[in-house]
Image (cartoon, rainbow over all chains, first blue to last red; front, side):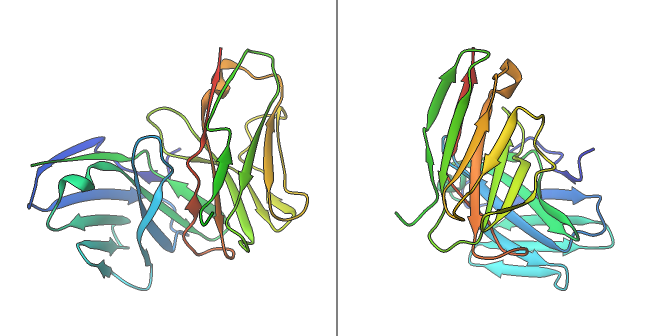
Length: 111
Length: 114
């Protein structure tokens, strides 16, 4: 039973355009959400997070939006760069749960 | 080093062999986690330590899996009598405190059971 779902296995975007990665969750106890980025043969690296008391958090080109009523969050990357090409994992925790990951979305940014 | 260090990076084991995977967390990090990542999947939680105490081992798939962190620093994940379905990348992560805080991951150990 997937508590964190990333329904798009892959996304292709042109350099300079916006990338939007989506994530849905089912556990209403989740109150802290994170995005990780992963290059091949490396471990996931933390990108940005948001707690449930906020609906938006911004860090440079990266913005995470949280819609608690819809149990949905998204990561916006503007402008996208070829170096952003990687697998992006959405993760969540809260209550008694440890960090739970989605299956990931592979982003390809083409020049 | 500044990051989480895992060894070996790659391990090939014949079915039935025992393996031991090592994790050196970031110095001073209280919490340590082990995750298993199968091909095409996200990391799945295995077990969690706070200092030397194993507070949650609910994700360990069978009693063939055992983890320890005897002095609250280095941790070892041991898999006995390996099976082909154990083939995966095993990720270790640490954080300065308990939830919520981002986890810092190592580069993982890729285990292949033949």
